[in-house]
Length: 171
Image (cartoon, rainbow, N blue to C red; front, side, top):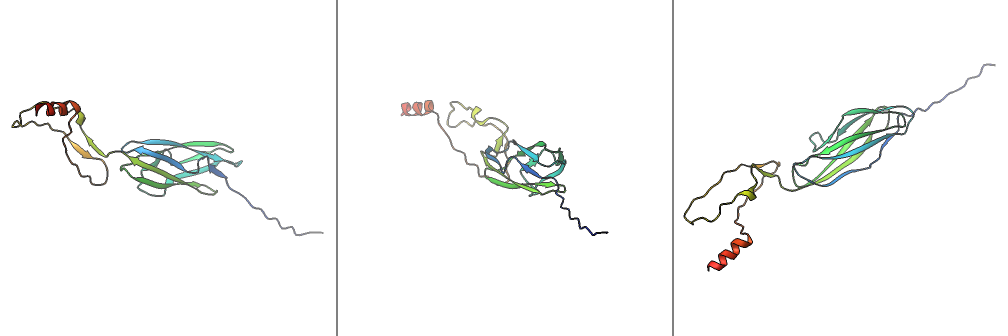
């Protein structure tokens, strides 16, 4: 006798996850590039193709490769960089699009510290020595703000211990 048989199938694409749930760079120097390695893990018995990108188009975070493949039951390491341009907190999300699988989102965080002002010479190397008060002494150097925010520069004279001692002896 012929019989009708209903067959139902449920297929699952590649199952991937990341070794790190969050990429926390911590406090990092501004105007320098810092690196963390992200490990992608494929738990399935089929290879997994992926695409990586940040949620924000203009991000201080950058990934080494935009796309790749993790072999079955394998791992793949990707370098992620951050280059903070200001002394402030930065957040973004690394989007991992898994072809035929579930996408992943990894929070990216860093806190830029330091100064965005640069000069073409080391300012501590400027030494005018002892000069007459009416003498004009000058030096030239270039100052640049490599950050995105405006910065106010204030000059002040700082005496070292030897100069302070000489000043008080002269009184």
